[in-house]
Image 1 (tube, rainbow, N blue to C red):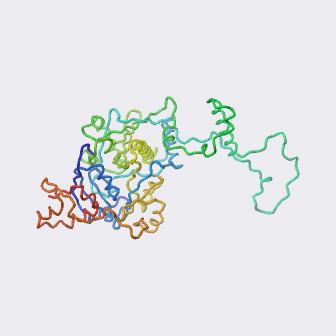
Image 2: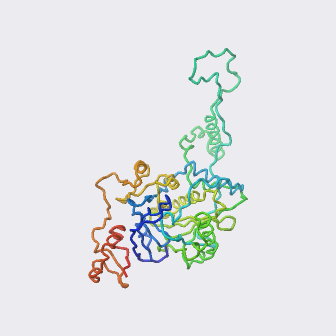
Image 3: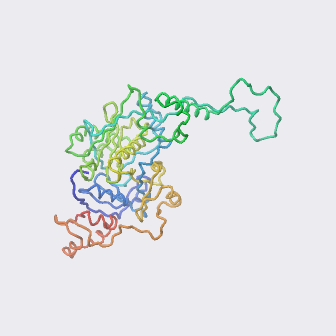
Length: 484
């Protein structure tokens, strides 16, 4: 999204023909509407993704949900309320072990796929992805985490088949003995021991920090002691002073006029080609610069398209393409060096992007969601996106977001489902007046009603009506539809 764009201009392509699905491999089962974006503002793109659209470079597409073989539902995560799962903590710890000790996992990641724009949209031809590079970062965050920490000792309660009956079999009379040794302390469960150690540490901390000894009797409540750590704490857990590997995440605006963008363009382009050939089986000719598209446009004041470049020991090993929009960070694509596939970079980068969203929200209160693209319940490999909780799915009929836990039962029964349970609810931005839709004809902006009067013999009313219905009344009155 280039800075300074004041309006959105698109060409609509329709979507009558079926083509190959990247998920179930159905040769003619994937159906979607598409349009080419010559320019796009961030607000228009925000409104479009909230109606089920998604971009691949400058190509913007919307699956025909009740017709396509693998319906793709827009999914968003409530970034402010996100808590990493046990799996997420393991991924962060795995990265920490690699950075601090050089331990590379032997397994190939955790099975989570890296979103392919080509497969997600079911697009024809090569993937269109922009590539940005940087010499000195706009924002630099150095990763220094050790991942999830666990108690140094794991103690289990002593199992004594004589003194602890299991409730099975005939009752037996215990053999007489001398009983417990009165000189030894009573046995305590491991959980109680760990709790006692935590309380002792809290007491020492309070006394050492100048808290009166009398105040140590009022120890922190268990709720305070057991409060879950925030995502940022897991990411920023300190590493040794001299880690074996150093990882930096640099945020770079996608702009050909930006020296930081252009400085490492060749390195990022080479990484993209390496990823596409190794992971998606592309040929070298499908990975040349002509396929690398610049994203749609957006204002310069913090919004638009960016690359989060992952620099490991001075070289780029992964690039996450993200759009910063008025109410969300939208994840577009990730490509990485295949040598680091076992580090689960797809999930790791998503966690970093959730944390990035939370950081931006402190500056822009409305920006509080993290969009993960599409959730495809019919494809088991794509269900991992539902693990980023709490999250919502977009109802394909009313365009309201519904908690994912309310949607799953319906998706277990059928691939396509309406999530809004109110039978009377409809699309609040449904097309009501086609004549008010804006078109760009012969370099002149005009409402469709005026265009239709000029082009009395035009037979494109059905196509324009289809386009306007898909983008909704509000966007139709703001976006310029190019007419030849």
